[in-house]
Length: 337
Image (cartoon, rainbow, N blue to C red):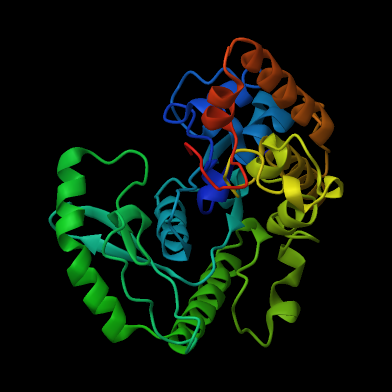
């Protein structure tokens, strides 16, 4: 067996976004016992981590996903690996979760690092970028700027806060939806062609939601999972919110706002996604099939563990209202998360 590394690229859905247990007590208590939660990173609950459990110790799964970042970072970080003098294509498998429009990477000369600008298009004209909401923090603005959404230093935050206005003006003057879709489609096609030219083993686990490539099915469809991992999360109600909600969709809309308010993929989604990816790469790249080293957990098993954790913690609270404020997003949409 020649494969040594499985390199995973993507957004917060790959990094393990939503599981900032070192910042949010609700996550830490809800998922107690499902993972040690000791390193203060997203790794433990990410689908690359679950994939590592499935493949075992014969190869190393590396997670290059990063919250808020998009396709330009995928191109850059992939090229860094392939361009190394000692790189051997047969030793690597690359997995790509592509982002949609609304993410633009810049090199920041003063910080000597790359920053990401996240933005939204105006729903009224469908083309221009939304203006700012001046009363919202930089990271949660309609147009935000970040170096690392959860790990910036105070000095880095001050620099980015100061620069936000300049980046906003630049984006408003240079960006339209039509041009963004055209550019993203062209860049993805060139990037994938570069991979094909270098005989890279890769799988697209999530296509961009918005792109225009007339020859996609002919050239690249065989490189994709049969169903994007994002579709699993939405169609099967497997977000953190769904997972921590004691009710199900069958219980009625009045219970819709229970649970921790986060629409990232839940732990069961990460496990299911990793299992589907494991099966796919096993069929595509290994003549001598890999042994599955972990059985994983089902959605029901994860949901029951969370429910038990809630119940146990609730018993320790003398005031039920305190418990609800600490954990649950109620119908009045008040939450600590």
